[in-house]
Each structure stands twice: as C-alpha cells, then as structure tokens.
Amino acid sequence: MNLALRFLGVGSADAVALGSSSAAIERDGVPLLMIDCGPDALTAWLEHYREAPPAIYLTHAHMDHVGGLERLFFRAYFDDRLRGRIRLYTHAALVPVLQSRVADYPQVLAEGGANFWDAFHVVPVSRGFWHAGLWFDVFPTRHHAPGTSFGLALRGSVVWTGDTRPIPEMLDVFAAHGEVVAHDCILVGNPSHSGIEDIEREYPAQLRSRLVLYHYGSTAEGEALAARGYRVARRNDAIALARACGDAVLSQENRP
Image 1 (cartoon, rainbow, N blue to C red):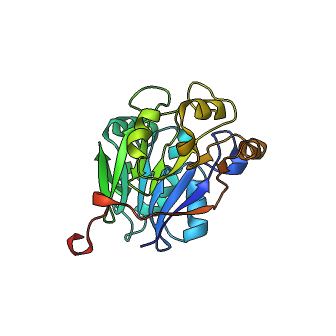
Image 2 (cartoon, helix red, strand yellow; image 1 turned 90 degrees about the vertical axis):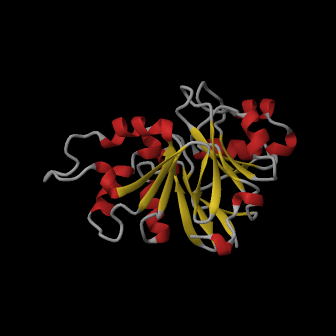
C-alpha cells in the first residue's frame, strides 16, 4: 500500500495564483480523501483526477476552505451516481457553522425540492473517523476562536494542520511517529496564522525537519521560506508517505 499527499493548492486566502490550500490523500495512485474544498480546489481536483472526490474532510468554515462546496453540490445533486454518496467529514462543532455559511440559502435550486445536504453524506466526527479502512485522528488547532478549526492526522504517515498558530502540544501527540507534517506558515505571523519565527521558536529541530510548509502569501514568500532551509509545498506536489501504523489500518479481512 503506497500512500501519498498531493497538494491541490498552497496559498493563503488572498494568494489566488497559488490556489486555495487543499490536498488529496492517495493510496496506490487512487484518491481517497480531499482535504478542504476552497473556491478553486474542486477545479484542481477535477483537472487531475477527472471525477468528483469520493470524500472530503473540512478543517474549518472559512470560505477559502469551503467555497467550492456549492459547485460540488450541483455536480453531485444532478448525478444519480453521486447524489448522497460523497462523504463529507467534519467536526461536529462545525456543522452549525457550515449550515449558516454554505447551506442555509432558502432555495438551493430555483425549482425548489432540494436541501443542500441532499447532495452529500455528512458525517459529523469528534476525535476521528474511519475512512477507506484507515483511522484518521481529528484534533483542535489555534485559528481565530477556539473550537472552530481542526487538524487531521494519519498515525505514522501524515499530519495536516489546517490554518493554525503553532500547536506543539498537539504535534507532540499526533506527530510522534515520524509523520510528514503539512503546516500553515507565512513569512510574518499574525494572530491566526503561524509565521516562520513562530515555527522556529515553538518547535524542536527534529520536528521542523519533517515540516512541509503551505498556506503562504506569494511565490516570493514561498521562496523566502525555502531559503531558510524548509521544504515548501508547490501546487501539484506529491509527497510519498509512510504506511500508517498500528490501529490506523483496518485489516483487509475486516474491511467492510
């Protein structure tokens, strides 16, 4: 089983040329899970995979991470093969936020007769979820208000922080087995995002050597981060991942 993380976009909300920060987890070249679905993330997915994502994990409800859901609604709702079958995993605390942000328009179809969530199979989660025989951990991050942003981890393989300030207490737990850590980072930090000096202050060298930085503000900013010795993600980069360890993998004979 060969796992990979493919970056569909790597930019901050205003770095349009870099694409909305989003990624796909692949197994043996087949996409399993889309992480976030910003305004142009679905376009990037379709250009690469040619079909709709089978499942999405949403880290938080800012529009640069969920703004592509309306377009995906139309693609799924009018396709009998897809309607109600695209799994949408998100922390239970985010369900009412997503309802107000993307699903509460009074008439999602001009003709009526449809609810926004009819196009999806919504799966609220708390500490994690099973998907495609793999256990994914979910953990809180530090982005704006508490309880509004959550990262994702596949033990032994990869951690995706989503938008966050440094979270050493979380990575001590969820990045303790040599995982690749895709981490929010801009050149100069602010109250909602990690800057490179924050990264260097908060994380030990061993962890910093496993970081792949994304959600930066421009090509020049990405080059400046790389010049400091960090791996910086680019659009469509695919990073080979280690096999998930321990009970993160459901044995073949027990898979549904």
